[in-house]
Length: 303
Ligand code: ADP
Ligand code: MG
Image (cartoon, rainbow, N blue to C red; front, side, top):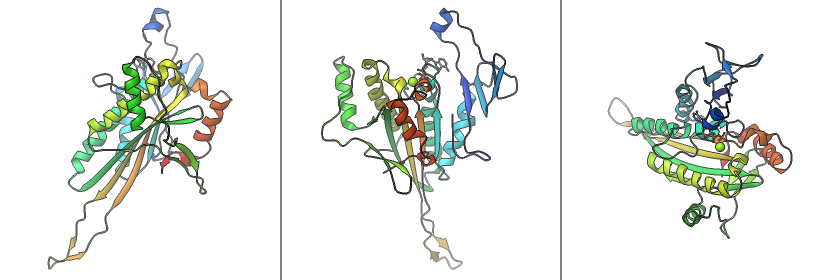
């Protein structure tokens, strides 16, 4: 996990060691990572590695991960701080599970659904003083292509295809593809991705579910493409403080207070398997272009 906005360093790294899953147990696999008691440190053989946090295995229970790593970022949104949470690791390490990118109602609650819940809790508390506007976008970067997972046409097509038992997405003719652009100031922006206005947690969850469906649909037919694609779920929070005129002693307003406006984005990223990122070739090229060319990518602005 990586995040902006911290007190000393703006990037924090937490490790989550997932438990062995059924297949691994059947094959007789054993945990090879031990956590040094009381320290955010893991040991693999004779090597030890220290991080900002370590969860899972014999370390801190992973339920603490959201509270310690992500809840402060959701709080930060309300002060206008952008933030990014990245899940990095090889295929099968638990990125999608931990992020909750492919969450379905009633199943495991990952970071994205929890972030939504925390966001709406806070909005509920503040809604008398502040007007809120929420937008979400959900994109997938696969090789050279940026796919808009919330494109209404894609979502509809994915559903129809699913119904027929044929997995796969249709690209709709006539719709310009999402483009990655670099402005003269070096800021990387995405243009043409769908931004859905949402007002309730349920609506936001629906966006996540529908988008994941578009992503998952693509993956079944194309040999687990999800391990080769980055998925970025972005929540944009706009706030407008409700005008509250300052009264003089005679009860007349002195001046209309300027509306206090804040806008911040939270990017929740389920990266492609890290084993792919190391590769050269077109995947590697795009990965570099998109993710390491400029720190301005985080936060990624959408125009
Ligand atoms: P990735 O997205 O990194 O390829 P997944 O999230 O798909 O990996 O996880 C791989 C498998 O491990 C899945 O079957 C998932 O259910 C399981 N898994 C991942 N994290 C956990 C966890 N914390 N507890 C139990 N099972 C997990
Ligand atoms: Mg995954």
